[in-house]
Length: 178
Image (cartoon, rainbow, N blue to C red; front, side, top):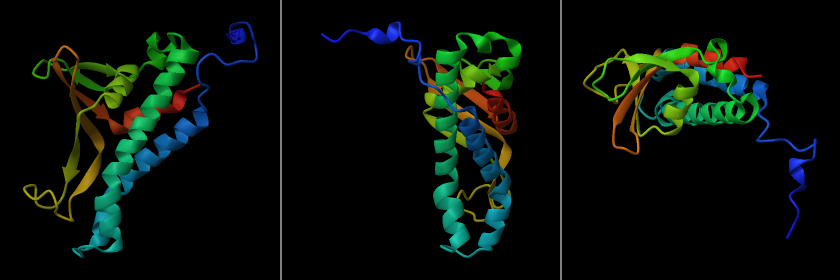
């Protein structure tokens, strides 16, 4: 059996080292997708299957969800392994939205750590939209607002929850990873 020498080896990392600059870059990309949404959808100009239409409708939401998951996973890993409770300090665990648990309860503050957990365990995502026909989800004039993303899921106990994440706050606050 191989000896587990790493417990005493000062060169070996405990947990996974997370590059803060990488998280900041991911947050930049996430926020710019939301901020570019309106102009990208305007470029479609009603032309189905145009380049902008393909970019807006096939990649926009998928890329947002992928980036949110990457950021949440990296931030939580960093917090758990390197921070050892740092996020329980107000500055490092700022409010980035609201949480309703159970789903029909009054909203309470959603801190960054819990927002990351909700992103990791989300079952359904809804976006704030503007423009176009509100009854037509495929209307090319509809675009994402960089305001809130609503996440839905349930605990293992079956209790349903809704987390509303303020996109701008979330992207700003994950930049303080150290």
